[in-house]
Amino acid sequence: MLDHSDYYSDHKYCHECEAYVPYLMSLEHSYCAQCGSRVRLFSESDWEAFHAALKERRPKGGGRPRKRPAKGGGDDLKSTG
Image 1: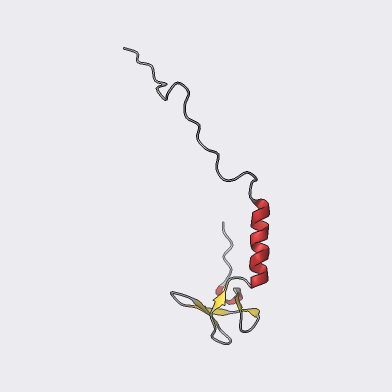
Image 2: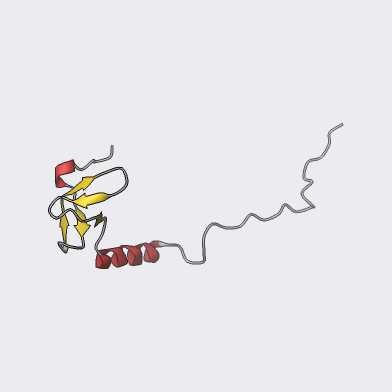
């Protein structure tokens, strides 16, 4: 079961206040409840640290392995007639 944080303890980063603050959410953006500026999920330094941690966790050598073509020209089914 997921642990949902409650609205009153959730915070986002306000560039104007230079702190994680409570916020008000609209359909398009979220705004600082203290000064009214738009807020972001992370501060710039936390965003860089988050991406660095993700980069370290990625498997080396790229993404998903490529599919290899079937041997014999792709016609592996034999007729039983």
